[in-house]
Image 1 (cartoon, one colour):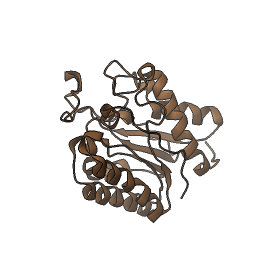
Image 2 (tube, one colour):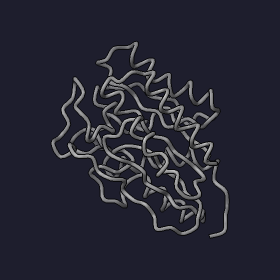
Image 3 (spheres, one colour):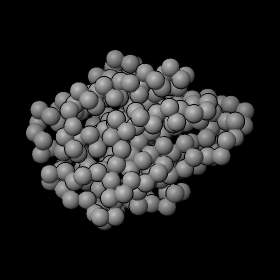
Length: 234
């Protein structure tokens, strides 16, 4: 198991709600009305025959509030192209999605030649206070099905709101660590490490990264996926 970076302490209840567009509000936060309707995945590349890197996530991945070329999956595509890697990044982010929602649409997300599957789900589970066992079961199934499809899996962790209590938030955080150890997958302990809780890196809602914040998320994800990349002919 490779851990990309240590998780940093959370400073406010909204941090765990960072992927909550389209969800019901947490008990300590109110989401803007503009986030009420789920949005489709931000980008699906035209079939090119190149291997794919699928980013399975929620509004953080979809790039809520950003132009399509400002989302972190789009920035990853730019970096891959500049570095000479012939991969297509599939933005399979849907705002408001829980781990169960990601599992339900996994078959579609794994369409084509998927080399890497980056799983960035769970924040909405935490925001709703859903059972930790449910999160673990859903993420386990996603990892297993991703591997069965021939993909290397990278797991990105999220945090639950502290208002649910230390027992819940601790168990929630531990799910990602336990799964990364059990399945020997690369772990990003917290997808918003260095971004959450920093006003200058987030949109006015205080929840979703702004363009600069998205660049920091992209850099963190790049650190996790780069060791798994292969030079392939375009």
